[in-house]
Length: 462
Image (cartoon, rainbow, N blue to C red):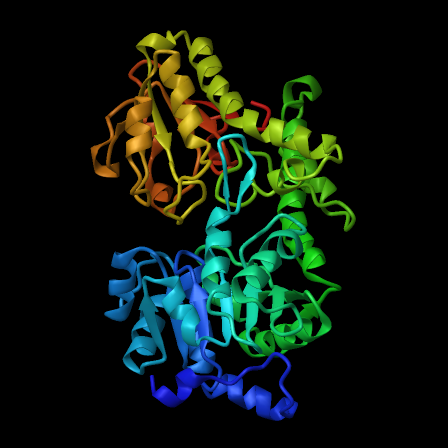
């Protein structure tokens, strides 16, 4: 990048015309730093670089930094990202550094998209975000714009991030801008989502921050830019999206547990109910995993004193589903006259969702643990998963699709990977007996009634 570009043009508080500010952002006169180059950060940084031609990405992993500077994408399963990263690096529009302070030094727009974790007590851990804010703050210049995209508990920007920025920089809000503009991105479709699959939510700590965020994301996102009143409202929007899904899934799972009492297929009733436009019950299943939905309710439950009985009930219900699914396996074995301590089970799918190499909060792990606890010999297979240690420690035998045994007493589908579609489960039935198939995702319903199969589904009546 040329020296002229790194001197930088400020958007916040600018007296230039709107047209000139738009031109400055898209022609590279506004240096951008993106902090965090992980699953969501690298796609976001790449889109920023594609629009502006002047992005420095910061990540503490030196291997990630070296790979990006060589034009390599380290995020698997993101269509178009390999080619985009290579092209951006080759035209000097994007580079990576391992020191966030180095990235902050010349940037005029700072975008933080680092992990917000949960501690051992389930409370939000913003230590990584706060560390990034200290690096930004110590290099903050008048006219700089700071944007947080990581999901945060409501009031984080005003109560935690803004004080750090002001203390480290010696500046006050009004001399620089701060906005919360949450990522609304799913793994496997990141570029599509960032570029405009949904409206972009922006909320500034003051009116000028909101204006600048609108200007920026009007170029990043081809969909609508939806401005809300302030940073806290924008933070709440993102958390509410996850809480809604968690509570809705919890309702579906609770209804699924009434299958035997109702003597119906609950999933059939849900599908029919959802034909009414005011009803949108989600699908019951073996559990809720990933780094989003299981954690976002904690951003409210653990941060504020107001009671949250609905969220707590949904979390409890969803946390119980892996055990509920494993008990289906054990009950099916008993029904077939097989002692679990002498049984073999094949677990299909270890990642928390199809096609994504991520096992955080995956329901497969507690399912394996419960089956092993009951004495079952567990094989587990997932061609997408590369994270093996936790499952091996739990007692599972990790196998490849080509190496699964000729026969099992039971199979439980947890994550319906595409590679499983050609797997003939009926051929795995034990000689002289039926194969217990527990369908954790309603993906194997065609096996109901098959002579070689004892079928059980979550919310599906046998």
